[in-house]
Length: 157
Image (cartoon, rainbow, N blue to C red):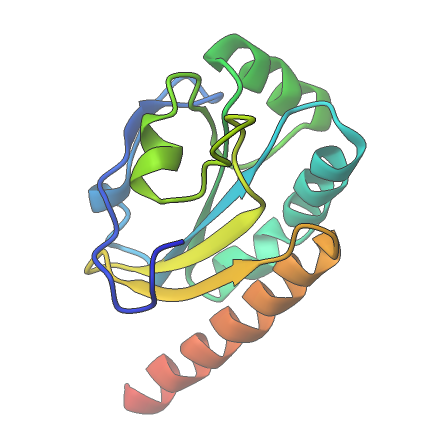
């Protein structure tokens, strides 16, 4: 996993929405939440994506952009996003370049670990959460962290 304070690697990839996601172009937001998950259409990953989708508007209101990334191919990721009506971009990383850059790839099985990063508009890692078993903890941790970040920004304004 990348450490808090590390530079976040650029992401420039096609999304399930038919557009390209470029991390460096998310700068209009307070932060970008990148959640990595092992595989589309599995019970845990489906649950996690549904939870993020359910809380997407809340995250947006707090100033966060959101993207889901797995080691599936682009077409599988598109089908997964469509099946769940995901309102945020989903990115397939079948060649493993993104998961490798973010140091979340399991070495033997080649799938992404369940890691969530919160990245600043300056592309610095603000927070990193890793819960393989407690899937719901990712969203809990993210909501608490982004809410605190949002409060600090409002206090500085």
